[in-house]
Length: 412
Image 1 (cartoon, helix red, strand yellow):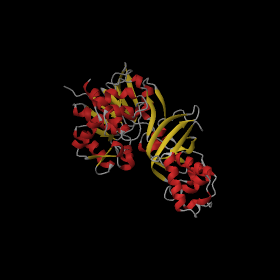
Image 2: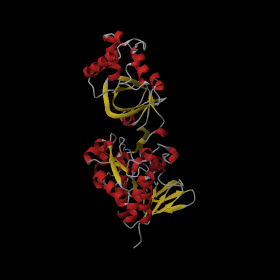
Image 3: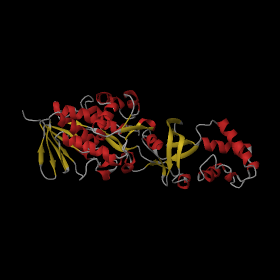
Image 4: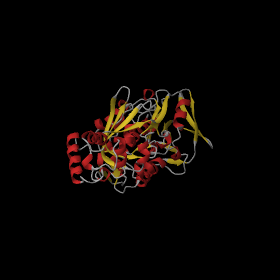
């Protein structure tokens, strides 16, 4: 009996997982990748360490998806975060769990993850061809072939796993959106998600390069005045604004971005309430009673932050500790507990970790990843309009959707 021909476009994490699953089921699988090397975006995830998933149950996983979480129920139940860990362990990639239940390879090398996935593809008999797909060919309501720069390849089913538009230098240039539209699918406008934030506040330039740990961050939508997100962890001041893990996660909640619509509020000492922090300040002022205030806060705040905080409070840095008034001390406390940064926009989408937007989930069967427009077309990974927070959740979306796509494209 002739093997079913399955074509996969894109050799990233979703493409390789889908192709390997389909080939393991006995399909004749061809993967097309326009780059010379596979998994280029995978290689830079987690700062080159590759945060492959999050060690959590399905309910917690779903709670970390702000865009179309219900769509992911079937996929995450079919291929869980624990399945992903077992999958890589079976491929010889030992894993470890770090802060926030983030799962990394023990080696801290994304290349080990990429090599393992490529081995999974090839060992199951799938073939990788380095050609760029230019168009999907359909006839009588079915996908029949793809056109590359060199020739036409026929297929029985097609999996689009082309990624989004973030990090275009890795090959994620939005090709999948074009293919989807060409066969009648609707694509939600791709925007940046998990992306640094731009501020016009001078304090960001003054503090550029300062990394903060163990701070509390909340995002406030100015009109109406309401908190839309809060987090605890690490962040970074840059010349353009804010970055770091808490900021990237916060960006996923900030939709329809406009200048001055959002502000980020930073609690520099979340472990201390206002009263406890006041006692700490009084203790330090007593300890350094005859010193300038600028030289009395180094045990409480990073050195580069002290002049910025004092300037915001309108306090002369040469004022002696024994001359600080109650109102000045309360201003200082307020700034430490609620340092406000005005946000005017996102950094460009090519700096985003993930793309928000993509092929509308209403046009995809969540139990199979099959198109509701062309029954032998499937989607996997970032090309679908689903995105999550940082912590390994987006790669898990890729693996889970790819598992369903590979299973159903090869067996149906």
